[in-house]
Amino acid sequence: MWEPTPDDPALIIIVDEWAELRDEARAFADSIARRGRAVAENLIAATQRPTQDAMGKGTAVRSQMDIRICLRVREPRDADLILGQGSVNSGWHAHKLARPGEFLISDPEHAMPERNRAYLLTDARRDYHAAQCAPLRPRLAASQPDTPPTAPEPPQTAPQGPPHGDK
Image (spheres, rainbow, N blue to C red):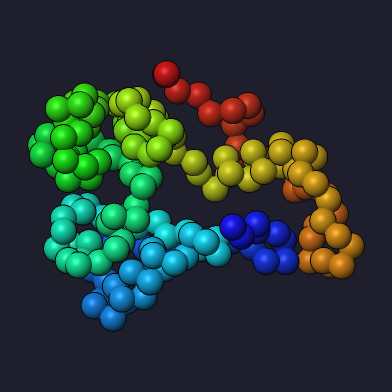
């Protein structure tokens, strides 16, 4: 198993609107899905409707996606499409999610339905939290001159403290 390091990092490939991929790109994605995990290549595919047609018939991509995130859907059958057949009957009711940012995650560690919530992360908020966490990061080797010596100051427009929201 590959252990990413600063010199040999993991590769994360994000594809938004997966259904719009051309056929030749799907062949590469299929190869990444089948062989990429062993060498720390991670494929994140986002789509509005992950149908068999949209994901590509006869490809390994859909079967290799063992972590699935489902936002609110209109129809129960859409949850089965995203999370797997029988999900709705097992209690995965993505069609009943109501709060902004609410989602269900299905992966080997989440065998039972659990609602989660994501929050909007603005650029200013990201910079604020990065500055707060900078002292906790390990120092990189001196051979990396492009590494800033200190963390940036929090932006003036960022609200003080962590994000708020109802839980």
